[in-house]
Structures are given as C-alpha cells and as structure tokens.
Length: 208
Image 1 (cartoon, one colour):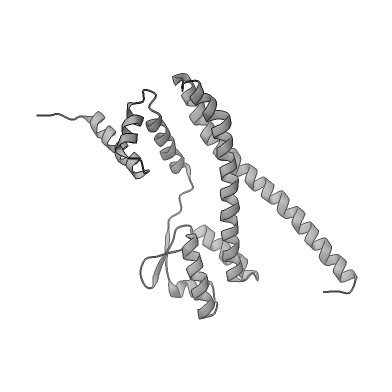
Image 2: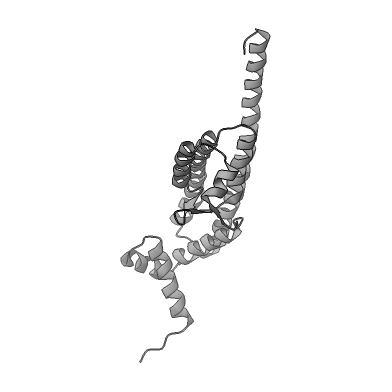
C-alpha cells in the first residue's frame, strides 16, 4: 500500500503544467530531477506574472450588439468580423454570440470609429500593433536571455542568484511596457507634427 502526501500532489501538478507547456515526460523528468528546480521556479514566476496582469472580465455580445456599436454594411461587417476573430478581438460562442476577451480594446476601436476612422482600418491597425508589439517584446526577451539568463546559467545557476534573476523578469516586463509607451507617444507626436506641417504647406499652395 502506498501513501501519498502534499509533496506528491505538488509534483503531479507540476508535471501537468509542464505537459501543458508541451514538454514530453522525458524532458519533464530531467527538469524535475535538476537540483536547481528551474521548472518550478520559472513556472512560479509565470503564475505570478499572470496574476499581475490587469484582469478584464470578458464580455459576451450578440451580432446585433456589435452592429449597434459598429454600424456598417452587412458585407463589410462580415469581412471585419472574420478578421477580428483571426486577431482574437472577438471569439464566436455560437451562431449569434461572441465573447470579447478585452472589452477595453473593443472600446478603443469603437472610440476611433466614432471619430471618423473606418472600422476596417481600425481593425487593420490592431493587427499592425500586434505585429510591432511582438517584435519589440522579442527584443526585450533577447536582452534578458543574453545579459541575465546566459551568465546565470554559465555560472551554474547559483541558488543565491535566483531571487535577483526572477526579480529581473518583472522589472524587465514593467520597464519594457513603460519604454514602449513613451517611445510610441514621442514617435506619434513627431509623425503627427510632420503630417500637419505637410498639410499646412499644401494648403498654403492652394492644394487640398
């Protein structure tokens, strides 16, 4: 007869999480047997970071709700809705109901449409933001891997350095988001100033 305690349950949960991340049992065994316990520590950080995200309560809308908020023709609405689904802005629940994972993102799209931007252009802009954000995020992750994780791993992952390594992940996350927002605002202001200057010049020349 075997007796199992909390430590066995914790190990089974760890195995389940690693399987969910795509690891096979051989790789999981290697990670669990590592005396530095990197899998447990990094998964713990992932859970912590997930808890630090701004939690938005998903919203469920009908097709009629979407049509009221974004009044466009049926043909345009079908095309934009399909693209919004591909981008993860909305997710179909049934033939007539859709889940909105981030109501604030949908509200932002609604706001720019209210001020004259076409719905299709607003959705295309979300796609552009996703592409550029992914590229910037990868650059910050590369900084972490090259400058923090690699020296740490080459040093044998000393136990006393784990706290600072893990803390650097959250610091990088926070600093990266802040830097991205600041640079975007500065760039947007410069581009807007250039565009307005060009418009002013064209008007002075009698052009529209």
